[in-house]
Image (cartoon, rainbow, N blue to C red; front, side, top):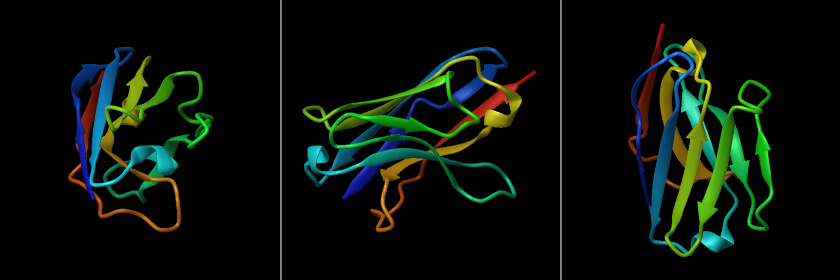
Amino acid sequence: VQLQASGGGLVQAGGSLRLSCVVSGISLRNYDMGWYRQAPGKQRELVAATSRDGSTNYADSVKGRFTISRDNGKKTVNLQMDTLKLEDTAVYYCNRNSVVKFPWGQGTQVTVSS
């Protein structure tokens, strides 16, 4: 299994970014997936999740600003991030939303500036 995240970059506070994760080696439709982030000096946290049935869940810190979506045919999991805040600065990763994870990919850096 390989997880390739992309779409990060430098953006001003209030701006938007769209992250994409290409998942190879599995049939994506069979897995609950999530986007995680890790800020410097902090633990990795789950910020958004999409289940096999298409339902979604969000951390309180991003609710109303981030939108997760999936395309099982294209094997992608996307994260639309709007109204970005300084505290959204982190490396973002996708992975299973499960105790058992796939090997982590490199992630994509998101930096929000004032």
